[in-house]
Length: 273
Image (cartoon, rainbow, N blue to C red):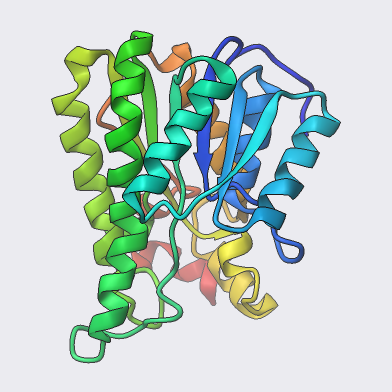
């Protein structure tokens, strides 16, 4: 973790999907929770797995940050309501919501000809409904506090078909996250609430920690910067969007992708040969 800062001093944040797994690469939720606390925020670490949440809390407390764990399934309305209530009861108010919970298309790949209906519905429930429900209960609390910042995590899969294996359900769900972001930004701007969306590219993070070294290298070579992203790249972007530095930024889709969305396959061909 970087040297402590004050960019979020006095703010209270909820980070969903913030648990730290016992193996694999760091996740975007964990990294963001750690950086939020590192920058002075009080952080409610939310995860469906109590052990994972406890690991993130331990990392924050080791750096003398103020935090607490909360176990919730954010696809459930009452869990989201209780999550917001817990943050207010513990820390007094709510300023930031980082909607990070999501699953990849690995478990339900395919085109529209192949996708499984139950898997499609589960993808939408976890990747989209969870963000809607968390926001539904967070927004009134933010209004009471005088405003706030909601940050949703989408994917380049919302704007491109990025993988060799089709994942139509995943891409569609992440496209819905962008639409949700823009609608909330418009509907709640006069409440002093900013809503933005981070669009990660080919990160090496916990969601894809089982991919081969060969595929990791191929993904790296497809981007203009020629480097591999990590969960911490998303986390630093979230710090900016959560802070007062971005006070006039709302309704934005911010790619964190090493320039991938600026390219075409032909422009990167020399780096892939």
